[in-house]
Image 1 (cartoon, rainbow, N blue to C red):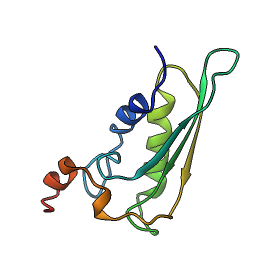
Image 2 (cartoon, rainbow, N blue to C red; image 1 turned 90 degrees about the vertical axis):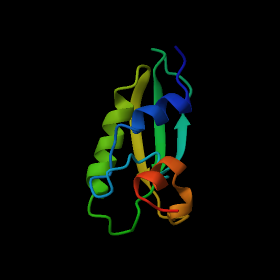
Image 3 (cartoon, rainbow, N blue to C red; image 1 turned 30 degrees about the vertical axis):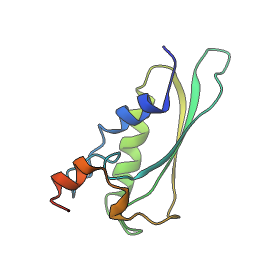
Length: 106
């Protein structure tokens, strides 16, 4: 099975924001998923750039740890790096329709 960005994003949907009760992918917190070339063992290092709903998000460390754990469980993943970025800032426009429905945002 080849590792894909879709596979990583599906895995990241396990991580639920404890304040909003919506997964971090549908919230639009995942900006980039960068899958590196495989190493000698066929394993890939993965870099995920994500943001928070606000710079002072109290759940930040929990979300980063959850994201790292979710990606690390994916078959074919070696090292996982989660980089928190604040640029561009997160806005509700990044949310999926599912997330908007769950939060009653129209």
